[in-house]
Image 1 (cartoon, rainbow, N blue to C red):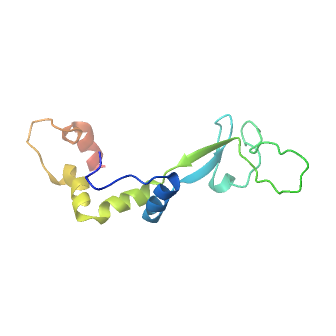
Image 2 (tube, rainbow, N blue to C red):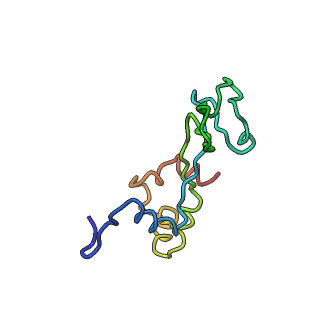
Image 3 (cartoon, rainbow, N blue to C red):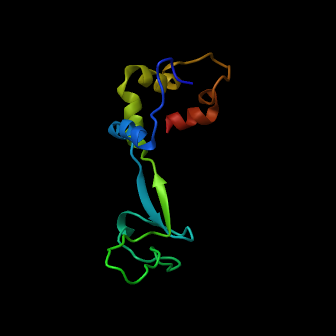
Length: 126
C-alpha cells in the first residue's frame, strides 16, 4: 500500500503527532441524546435540550474529592471542511486536479462526467 521504505507509525500517539501539525483537527459538539438539537453556537451553554428537556450531561456520582469533568450523553465529531479544502488548494498540482471539471471543456454532446449533465450546468450558472 505504501511506497517502499515507508511504514505506518507504530502507535496512535505517533500517528497523531504526524497529523496534528497539518491543522486537520476535529471539533466535538455535544448533542441531545434524542437527536433533537446540538449544543453549539448560541446553545453552547445550555444544560438541557430546548425541545425535549433531556439533560445534556450524565449525572455524576456523589462523593470523592476529585473534580470530575461533565460527560455528555452524546457527542458529534465534526471535521471542519474549510481547512481541508485550503490544504488541497495550497499545492499547484492538487489545485489543478480540484479545478479540472471547470477548466476542461470535454467533448460536446458526450456525457462522461456528472459535470456534463444539465443539472451541473444549471448549478454552475447559479
